[in-house]
Image (cartoon, rainbow, N blue to C red; front, side):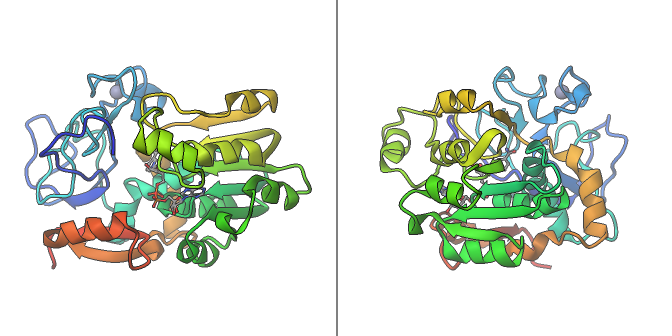
Amino acid sequence: MMPDTRVGTTFGHEFIGVVDQVGPSVQNLKAGDRVMVPFNVYCGSCYYCARGLYSNCHNVNPNATAVGGIYGYSHTCGGYDGGQAEYVRVPFADVGPSIIPDWMDDEDALLLTDALATGYFGAQLGDIVEGDTVVVFGAGPIGLYAAKSAWLMGAGRVIVVDQLDYRLEKARTFAHAETVNFNEHNDIVVHMKKTTDFLGADVAIDAVGAEADGNLTQHITSAKLKLQGGSPVALNWAIDSVRKGGTISVMGAYGPIFSAVKFGDAMNKGLTLRMNQCPVKRQWPRLFEHIQNGYLKPNDIVTHRIPLEHIAEGYHMFSAKLDDCIKPIIVAEAS
Ligand SMILES: NC(=O)c1ccc[n+]([C@@H]2O[C@H](COP(=O)([O-])OP(=O)(O)OC[C@H]3O[C@@H](n4cnc5c(N)ncnc54)[C@H](O)[C@@H]3O)[C@@H](O)[C@H]2O)c1
Ligand SMILES: [Zn+2]
């Protein structure tokens, strides 16, 4: 849960829809258009937007020095209501949304508004060089897409780490990755070293974030006692699992207060750490090509389609990871 999530907020920052009405200054969209809306709210013209850093827009959030604007993701991220609703207000409508191309499946368009773009961005920030060994921590939607994208960027070997076997199975079938269940090893870092000639992977991607399992002390000091802004277990495993001079890409989200990250090890190993909230629309042109050319089929990871009126049960299943849930989507209108 993000800090400053207020009662009554509408969640949901991954959505598509049909334009119902446009404001007077909107020029590119009209009622009836099918649109996909990136999860970032951004102005398109500030210092950051001009540099493609849409997730770091300076004009859309009173907390803009810390974080950009995100739909349905707390007042820390601007207090915008999200898309898990019949109607949603979309500011800067000429900037973020795009008309969904006729050839694109609705579900694929939906996944492009966050998860796929983020997974791809995660691989991109890894600066993967041909033949690299890439280890991805987390086999949720972000990790699965990051693993799949790593191949598209030239990886020679892709390893996905999680503790949920049904997700690791998906990592094998969808992302064609090697998989490791971290619960089956006393020390996952030692295992990663052994499997990479005792050097370490070239690139590690943290697709887990603040809610990581795998270390009780970290869990208690973060989730229970709130002494740190999230449990950095996966990030620390990433730091320990890459070779000296390697690159870490952090897609996993962490809270605004500090976390006990092994920064000294990262420094002494000469690692490059790259991270951000995904500037979604920047990834679209290349991802559209990959989908159109058949290299990516985003909705292969969708496990559940839930009518909006059953959203409460959907949340329960999703948060408890029941029924082999990986990616549920909410359908506002059964048509
Ligand atoms: N940077 C961005 O723009 C951006 C965008 C979307 C999501 N995110 C963040 O990315 C992260 C992943 O999102 P998701 O939807 O895939 O989440 P998810 O919860 O579905 O997946 C996380 C996976 O990590 C696994 N896991 C837990 N602890 C682990 C550990 N120590 N090592 C390896 N795996 C571990 C869990 O079993 C789970 O399968 C979240 O933190 C999310 O907030 C960031
Ligand atoms: Zn801006």
